[in-house]
Image 1 (cartoon, helix red, strand yellow):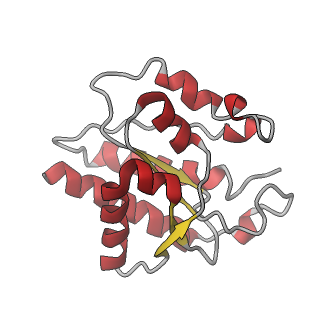
Image 2: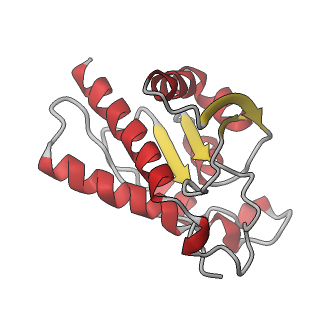
Length: 177
């Protein structure tokens, strides 16, 4: 499966954020970028075999420990709607609300205040293993998820730009505090 949205989209946003952070370094905030999207490598119903890369990372997290983890996954849908994922609200409610409020104040109504049912992926595994607040920016209502149709023509550069803009703006605002 090509995985243009489920896999590649989050990586694309993170690579642009990495370039941005390199060109315009934060002064007061550290950012670690973790490239994993192997939560699907397990067997359905067997949570112990999901998110293996994230679980391995949690055993050797560099210090100082992160204060927050943001998972960027499936963020390129042409008709995106980023709902507030349930585990994210449980694990990092204040930060979820800050990000969604920021997105909406910037005019990005793609960030919806509806609640998405729980999704067990890398953000959940990270929280379970570390207790560090973790959230997911994800459009899980993607009709081509886990199909051969998850191809670039179903993706939107505009949606990628929206997510990258919101996350980078959030980081730079946090850096000022």
